[in-house]
Amino acid sequence: MDRIACMQTFVRAIEMNSFSAVAREQKTTQPTISKQIAALEKYLGVQLIARSTTNLSLTEEGKKYYQYCQQILETVAEAEASLAGKERATGILRLGCPVLFGQMQIVPRLKAFMARYPDVKIDLMMADHFVDMVEDGLDLLIRIGNRLDSSLISDRIGTTRRVTVATKSYFEQAGEPQHPDDLVHHNCLVYTRLTTGNEWHFQGKNGIIKVRVGGSFQTNSSVAIRAAVLSGLGIAIAPVWMFGDEIYRGDLKVVLPDYQPTPLQIHAVYRRSRFYPAKILCFRDFLAAEFKLDPWVSELGV
Image (cartoon, rainbow, N blue to C red; front, side, top):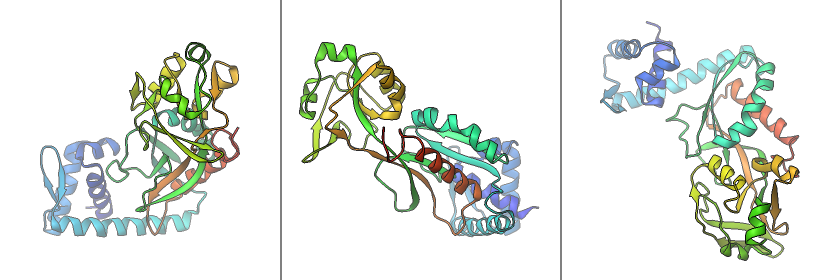
């Protein structure tokens, strides 16, 4: 029995809460994963996992062993990396990010990253809902927003400036707001994943202005917000990168130039550890360098 391999399988099964998911990840079968865990339990002489039809839960012995396994696997990875060096980034990078940001800012950059680090493969999960890194088995998560999780490492790699925007046809019909307070009379398209909900925040000369808005459409999808704005349905505050091309072409118009929606920070988030695999650090540094040169996601703005 390869105990290191069994430890890795055991840890991944708990992280993903599924033997089947681990089997797919390792390109094997669910019975094979079950046999690995069973062999490990037989070797140790204890039950590690209490199985049910919908959930995997650790026994008391399993909890202790899980913590030791994490430490052992980190030490093994650290030993291997000390010989390989940072530029020898290898393995599968399990990456998470918001849907539209992934489509527009991450995926187009992957070819350049993979050309630089050909031994790294990307497993990308895109979701607009809150993602639990451990539960979803992610190595690195790109988060947009100013709320940080102190239990994780959050490295700032960019800034997303936001604008108040709609189509020219919408403004011809509804008029242009001159002050954030005017937005209460507009059909505001609300992205419900914002931590402030339907309360939009603006930076004015005299400080922060908060306006509670409303309208005929709200959604938890950034993709749907983009489509709704482009259709002329209403007005939204959105990252400038979401509509940069349309703004430059004149298809959309930015209003309230003296009242900027509060910018949001872009972070590379990963779990605390004594050792960080090269694949994580290389991708973090790659994105930070890329974003620094891109006015839509850098401190410089546009």
